[in-house]
Length: 383
Image 1 (cartoon, rainbow, N blue to C red):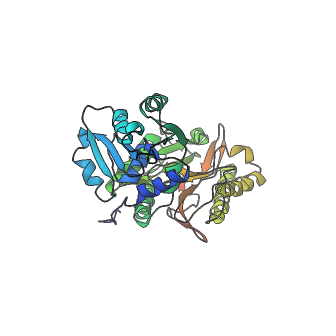
Image 2: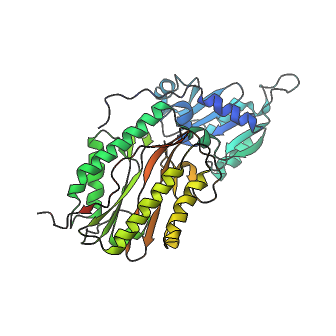
Image 3: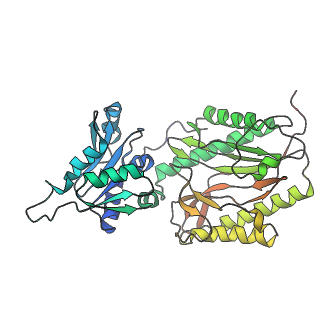
């Protein structure tokens, strides 16, 4: 269940950290267009906004729907809120950065000459409009804020841990209702209703329930298919708590598993343990993928592991760092990642086992704790 209260979130100092990182890249200002990055920098949770970080001002631009909300949410962040009514946000950004005018001293030393954009978070049309409106060179940044926000503070970790605990409890309660004849969609609804009843704000993403041949599809959507005897059933579920998410996958079987199901579940479970044992600060993210992939390959199923091993988790369900082949990003204490190897056999089914863990100096701390034993669901239909 969700605690009655969680420690308050604070965005204080975050935008200044971003400003320092932008300056280190050689830019004078950054225009932030990704709403999740804006939320992390400022605490603002609205659906419309652009955030400008310059040498002397950190300003959120939003519309009149958030006239009262924006100043309140930004109060602890040290950022300004500018509510524009019937104004083009590009024009407001231009006025703040002054197109190179007004911020200049006599020698032009304070001129905003290079403005960074989130290259992977801005559409081409807006980039062109900014290019025409600003008297400055535009430069790209990719993942600058994502990397900063990947290291969670204690208040953030508490929300992710709470979300993980809700999923553990709800899956424990629901598994006895996952029986022969129940549909994938009904199972997903049970889980999502249970998470809300336990205090979650909702699911962290569309809950995946994939049974029988559908279990060979890593991102299958829960559909109308009903559980049949011998089905492998992949359940990928997460909860949302105050903007922060958890992520967990377990694989069940309806009735008694055949020998192949037992084999691949055992391989995936042991591969996942290898990956979790590899996690610690200072390790490249790709090393976790290598550990899982090498184990599965040694067991003869290398071609059946068809996706990356994991990803960061936080305000988004897929964040920096990507835990995939060849990624040289170095893990840091406080990052939250998933470890989720799988084996998928077309026409037969698949197995995935996933946990969300916090990176520590000497290892990791699992947040999702539901047992990984191969649970056999009832082969008796509901009455």
